[in-house]
Length: 70
Image (cartoon, rainbow, N blue to C red; front, side, top):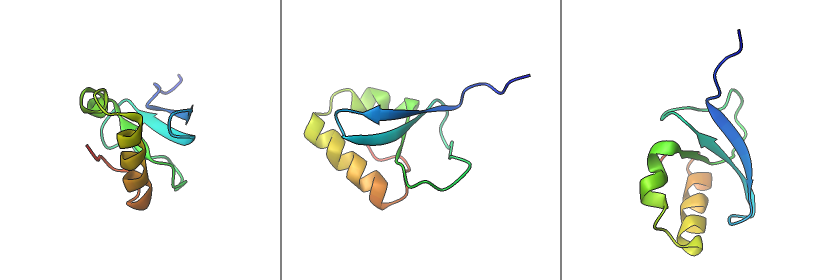
């Protein structure tokens, strides 16, 4: 039986880089890949952000290993 999908790797055109989109909080990739993780629970707060604000959040996530930054 296949495992349910927990996250998807996306090539973001807004950010100009790959990101993980995780369906559950606390998800981490099996291997350290230094790709920032955006969680589904963050979407309500992220929805109102400008592309510049999203890039700033992306850069903070990348610098600090991925966790939640809103």
